[in-house]
Length: 212
Image (tube, rainbow, N blue to C red; front, side):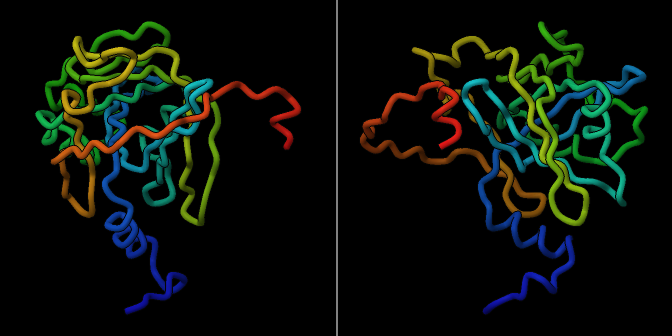
C-alpha cells in the first residue's frame, strides 16, 4: 500500500502522522491572556531542542487560520509554563483539549489548582509532577496551515518531592502520559534497561566550533 502525500488534506495527513510518530510526550501548557485568564491545553508535538540553555519546542497549530489561545497568549506575554501530567491526570489532560472561548479558564472549569511561578507571570499546575517555567526564545513557522514551532527557554524547573535522584528523574515514579493516534493515550508500560553506552562529554561550543 502507498499513499501520495501531496494529495492529502491537512486533516488526513495529521491522522496518519499522529499514528506513526508515537508515543508522543504531552506538554500540558499553562498560558495567560492579556486579560489575566489562565489557559490550559495539551500539545503532543513536543520535545527538547537544547540543553545549554535548556530549550523546549512545541508545535502549536491554528484553528480556521487563527492562532489557538495558547499561541496567542505566548505571542502576547512571551511566557508560558510546560507542565507534565501523570497517569492519574489523564482524563483532565484530555478534557483540557476541548475548545472554549478565550475568556474561559480550563483550570477553573476542571477544578485544577495553580500556584505562582518564580520567574514568569504565568502560574503552574499545583499537582503536576513536573513544571517548567519558560520564556519565549523564538517562533518558526512551518507549512501551509500556519503551524508555529514555539521554542521557550526553561528558567526554572519544579519537581514533585522524590522524583529526582542524583540529578536524574525517576521516570517510573513520574508515570507520564503519552499520546498516540486519535483520542488514545498510553502510559510507560514495561521499562527495559540495556547496558549504558559511553558518551563524549557535552560542552559549550566556542565561536569557531559553531561555524564548522
